[in-house]
Length: 357
Image (tube, rainbow, N blue to C red; front, side, top):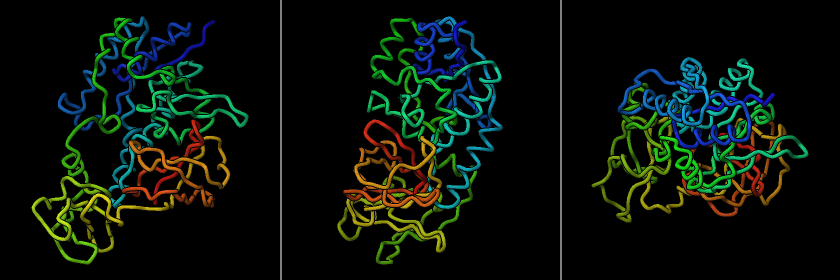
């Protein structure tokens, strides 16, 4: 009997084509739509209703059943609570990283196994490969869409059960396949909002959950140039929304957030994109997770990303002490941000990563 695979279908084109390809390969495919956010689910920002309609229409076109499941409680406990804790502590978390580890590849995987599935599949642009040490996580073939950065916390047990059917394709080919197959969402815009929460004015959204705590905005020399609304609402490297558009001084260039001091509730800003305080030659990180289950060798010739949309940076893994690591870059990196992840690669292989301290 053909292997049963449950595909996480979001209503987008990538997961729909993932289901299509698996069906064509002879798997017994079932679609699963996850609803993970309920607080203000409306059509303006978090269009779960429309996404479910799109997923159902795609499943119908592919010729598979679609089940809807609600993981809102798990999402709130495992992802959103941590998301708010990190912001409250002055860091800038990446909810997609935690969401993948806790919801898409834990709660979803557990549910699929209870349904009798052998494996799950998603529309992520990533690949897996059997290696000497187990399953390797590889970058997606489309380097512009590669999502291995968000998947670096997955372990061997999870990866052994996962298929990434579109990981070897380029995005235009995915849309072409969807169009040729008559999938109604072939031209649907990609989602870029918070994982499962959607696209919305971010500061306004955070303000509903975190209190404002105004304090001084200062230059590195200690000159006060303004007042912030609360350190949780700013991130390193931020340019827009600081409230210093008309303020001048020094070089006269644009202002950027360079540091946050939680003890004194002070926001430090600098002028100029390439100000030295925005550059870091090394980074310390915590809570390291390694895809292979053990850390790689401490050596040079690795590459790293300190944020998703960053070019690869040549680096050296200098120290591994339990779950703490230190990474030294060949060239200083811009706006390295506490709370984000530093993810290491060895060519095409994603080794794992840690949370920037």
